[in-house]
Length: 264
Image (cartoon, rainbow, N blue to C red; front, side):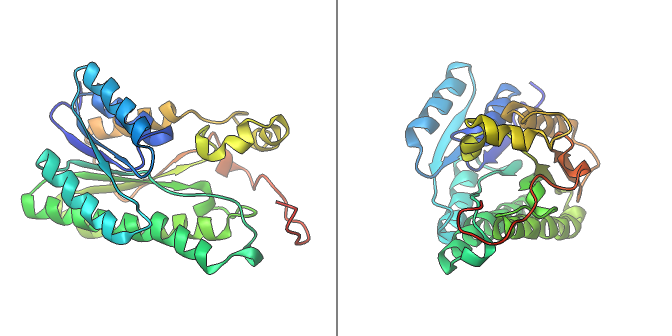
């Protein structure tokens, strides 16, 4: 129970990595807000499991494509728990699309959800931390594609790269308030968002052949790192922690080809 009496908001926590994080936080004693967009039934199952184990969990819905809902989520999470000690920006969207096929709709989708809403949610939560003298932590999930280009991930990677830059600036500006801000660069993690890869043996082999550890990571492995760092209450801020099985030690997983709408 290393996080007893702490209060955490985890975005996108009805399934996948967010679910693993919120479950681990609750196991360590934290009161949690489970945020979801459409997966209410999944969120209810996560909350029920936490409560059955003696934990405290709340459900809040918000569509982060709508930046006003992101702002409201900050208000609602703070009000329902009385404060927020930990903000885990996990929610995001990803899909492959060649840069030449990118539409305005794609740009808005990636930018609103991955960047703008994360920025505004973080701003509103940390402003409350400052005003209430809460020495909190903000952890933001980014991606190897925010650091290293990936075929079909130019715009997605740009939004994750923007978060990397943003959060380092936020870490600098909030350090005088003892609010620690760090990012987690994830490689291939086995979740619903990339099921098309791990459910296809050929695609899976193509990816894992280029991961030094030779496999995809598990959501629980990400959750373990995050919760252990939160529990340590370390001196670390403005850092980027890579959880990628060695992905970024190599040069990439796919060579570009001549443009075709079929070559992704």
